[in-house]
Image 1 (cartoon, rainbow, N blue to C red):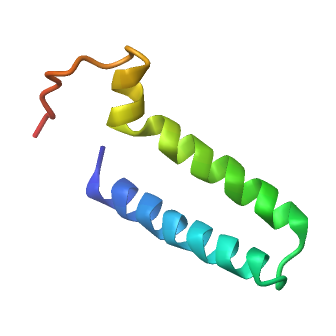
Image 2 (spheres, rainbow, N blue to C red):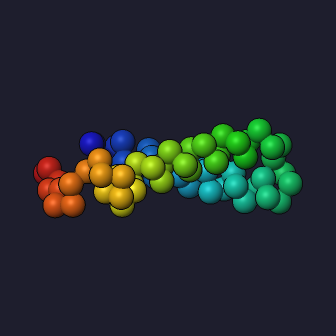
Length: 65
């Protein structure tokens, strides 16, 4: 993955957290919360830890340079 892709994901993650806070504060409608929960769930599912628990990635995964 390129650095710009990781940066973009981090920006969207930050926006997602902001959306959760704003939704809980009653600023945004419920539909925004649904999209945020879906995005956060996808990001959690993509983590190495969850993938290892599901047996989809080996424990000794070596990251390419």
